[in-house]
Amino acid sequence: MLEVGSLAPEFTLKDQNGQDVSLSQFKGKKVVLYFYPKDNTSGCTKQACTYAELYPQFVEKGAVVLGVSKDSVGSHQRFAEKYNFPFTILSDPDHEVIEKYDVWKEKSMYGKKYMGVVRSTYLIDENGIIEKAFEKVKPAEDPLKMLNVVDL
Image (cartoon, rainbow, N blue to C red):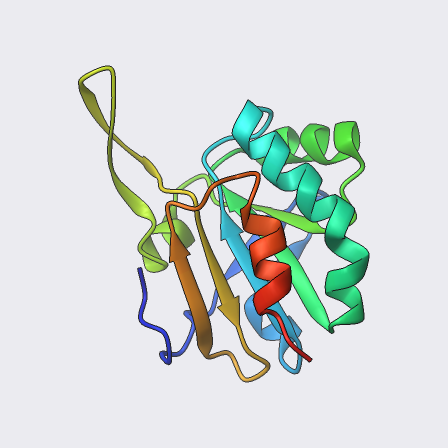
C-alpha cells in the first residue's frame, strides 16, 4: 500500500464508456479510489452494488467514487449497465495504475500462486494526498466503512 500522507499517483484511464478519466479532474473533491479483482464476481458485485446504494451519500459529502480493475472497457460497460452504477469504473488492462497503487500482489488459491489485484481502497483528499489506505478490504463492509471516513 502507498503511505498515508503521500501524493496519490496521477493517472488517466478509460471509463466504462471509453472516455478518458484522470485523477486530476477531481481536484477539490475527495476521491474514494477502490481496486477490485474482477467484474461480475460475487464479492466485486456486492462491493460495487453497495457503493451504488450509498452513492448519493458520498455525493452529499462532496466525494467521488472510482472503481478500478483490469477488466476491459466492454466488460466494465456491461457490468455498469447490468447493475445501473451511478459512479465511474475504470479499465486498467495493463495493470499500470494497479501497480502504481501497490495493489498488484502475489495471491494464492488452492495452493496455486498467481499475481492479481488485492481488494484495496484509498481515500484521496481534495489536494491529491492519500488520507486513508485500506488493504484486503471486505467487499460487503468497504463501502460503508469508506462513507464513514469521508468527512466534509
